Image (cartoon, rainbow, N blue to C red):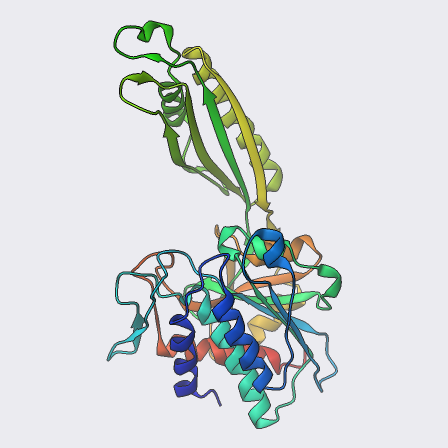
Length: 371
């Protein structure tokens, strides 16, 4: 019963709206008006003011006529850069891309579209459905900035389907890692590089040495790490007195992220000492690991619905973070459902008409399921 023509029009309309993290106003207003036309009143919270953005999270409850537990459906409204001036191009084979100079925004407007279309089908056909909670978030791409600022006392659901994963429709992530981010600040001593370099303490060389020693990539079972930014120095004729590196550690075991960060600290401290420098650290865990077992109702229902649609229903770990990591910290059991986004966070991002249609069909099946 999914209306593919309407679905694609809705998707392309939202893609055309700029919605970078911290400025999702246009998409937020679009969703709010769309829901109002369906008779669903969505409330916008104050997360925007808390995180320094223009827009809050959207929250709504849709009463159901099936006597079943309320379930939350969630996706995020922001997109990564480059995103300004996005335009969806529909190719003859059904592939949907950007024009090549921006991301497409299927991460995560594909998720938004799937949820909205499922609700529309329910309303226009008078379908019986379970109680539904809707959560459309902001600043997800900043490690769940918007959902972290949510008032969880207002949320009724204890189970959630977060439509925000790449890959084949009918797959989902049932576990995801802690993401620990850090900044190491190397402090040396400046001096004239031409006639007094011996008086300096070279912060860039200390930081560079540390970077060569910090393990990156798959550093252990279930642990990935990276150093992504190094920044220091003012001019070629000055021995640099300051250099910073920024990195992250992802671990399915939250405690192991602390262990690996301790190793990074030891490496940085030793490298600093070799050049007579000091080093200080800033560290944060933006999101923490979650794991939902296969016998959890949220997984069993997903697999059952996928089976009815001829989809695989496969649940597996992902090294990507999402709003679901934050939901889990607040006692909500959720999995992250694929919406058919591909090559995310790049100008090569794409989806297809068939994938968007299947994602909406899966959302509809989950909303109307009695279990």
